[in-house]
Image 1 (cartoon, helix red, strand yellow):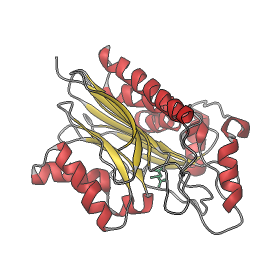
Image 2 (tube, protein in one colour):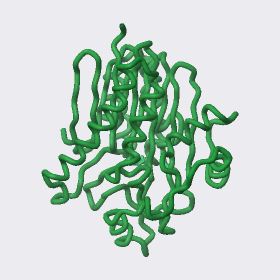
Image 3 (cartoon, rainbow, N blue to C red):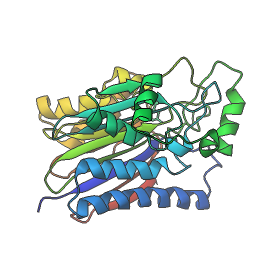
Length: 309
Ligand code: ASP
């Protein structure tokens, strides 16, 4: 049997000093562990990488602790607009949605775009129409209401500023979630989901749903899910850049991931991190911020649930 593995993230960055209590840290770690376990369970039982990343991301979307699904941040219009993407490294099939609202699990809608439409990326009203045709149930605003997020938004709602999850001055935390997995057949997949930035407007979309920027998978190289300052990650085409360094420069997964996060994205001003696996089950989780909510587990006994460096 080949080595199988999974890695997940709940965003890069750090909580503003004083906000992280030992109790809250335990909550975060438990939520990460729960998501890791449901994904790993799939792989252990012969499930596919694409199933594993979807269930792991759904678990993170259902937690109010992360900026995706239930915990999504507020837009300038006091609403929630979510983005998600999923990609299958075996077939190179991909699905993505952006600017959707009321959907409990955006990652599943992205998967439906991949499997039930002729398209890769659906946005806004059209994506919602697609969800309606598939009989998605819409959650009301109460489901997505979170006092902490609301207060975050109230602080900046009358300004032109927008902020990444929890960010304040130099401290910032990006709460996007993601998962990458390698299954027993050596197929890999990646999924990413986010609420984007607090107080965002004009239909702002970050890197998370963009194939090649925030999310990418190809059995030949790697599966990657990113978190960080989306505008920079889009310009750096970060997830695909990792794959390119592996394919064209013959770098290992670790070397390529570190080169992109600790050098190439930093050089253009981006901060954040990524999680990645290759088809041999190797895992890399580099970040250039003070911390990244992350966890991984592989069939050769590696297991980690961490927040800080
Ligand atoms: N990359 C995401 C975005 O720019 C934010 C995050 O990682 O939390 O939308």
